[in-house]
Image (cartoon, rainbow, N blue to C red; front, side):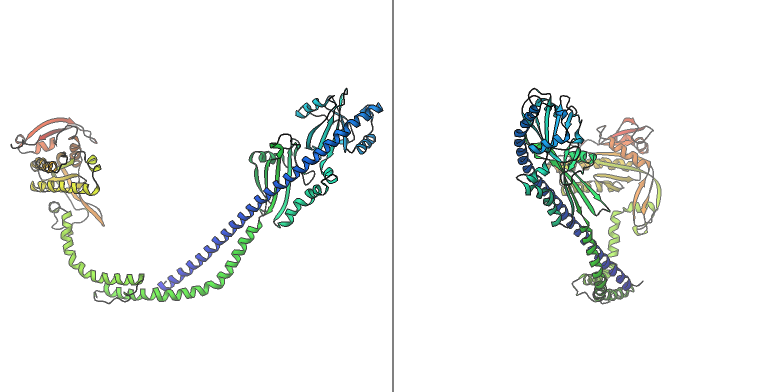
Length: 601
């Protein structure tokens, strides 16, 4: 596939990917935007339900007060009428009880004995109902014989779930209580708040549904020991497990159907839960909102479909225009540059380069080719000088040992085995010293130090194999040269320290370790990067001996192998120090301390 075709395919793929990516991003953004709007709307509806319920609580408080005032008037009259008849409550018929309720404006009447059992009532479902021991029965115990009308507030019927207010009267000298109940919803419709009570149940919440097409259902549930009953849909109850979770977590979202609808349950304390003496017994209300969340998906689908239509119409035209511009601005100059590069590769270093006057990347590339053409000519001349410079990094002594006349002749794997003396030197406390200097000062210090030590090693027929930070590794053909070089390095150090003292700087100390043994000297690495190195156990031992100079407070230590190779060991101040097993070794090695000759006074 040619470059032009590859570029066309790539351009089309990029444009298509960018277009589809932008469509996906726009769809996700639209979905999030609509979802956030819906979440805000749901929270607004929750607040609205709470406000509407607060209005309802005010209606309940007022209506309850009216009912209690009425009961305080009629309950003693009912008790007095029983006394006049001389009949016991249990002897009354349901019809007679119904007549009493009509006469005195109550809905249901009950008679409760000392065992907290309803022994007479005109409500058949509550006949023989016995109340279990609770705070309510303790309240009843205060009513017996009190000759007072008392109220236990508004509660939900455990059978029907309707709101009722209950009043109690304990006639003096009697072992029973007269109880009456009034259904609040009907009472509101007939009382002073007639139209408002009806509006609350029939229109107040329906308005929310009519004003929002995506709102499918709203409801309010009061939580009682008998369950969570709906205020708006009489007889409907919530699952007890759901109620228990809401009492703890206060909020739960339940997807419905195929996920299009979302039902949100949220709970909060009623005014009865925070205000002492509130007539409503329930202290927790649950709001239910069912919302159609399909709008977000509809918005995403609309964006996708619209984008696909626009993409199908516009992409071919945009691609044709973009490809023509790309051909003119990029491909044609590249093809021209390809021909010019071929001419230079064939040896025509005078080939003219077009488009160097452009100020874009093509112009920069053309200018680079022109610079490259000129640089090739210079490179041929510079190459000789470069080879000479490279030899400074590879000692001539190394080349002699491996039998190569020039660094250009060195190949990977060239090696020779020789018996040589290895010298290691290191500055004591260099880490602490370098922490007190800047990087520039550290490099200046090391280079000044090495300028003193390098010539000393070369003057004694050695060569430096490598620098390891402030450390020096040098190789010598024989032990005598290594020993003399080490002593000369200590002497050079004295002069170096004199200069430091004159500059107001603290003197330094070094340690020198020498070992003699067989080693392999050659090249290692790979074809693109190789290095000359020494491989031998004798090298490791020399490094270990140098590290022992700190432990034995000796500026220079040599191994027994170096000592045996010395032609005149008695000519130097050498004394045995110890027999040690150095780190990484198992066999003991004798080490000797070499003292520099006394300074001439």
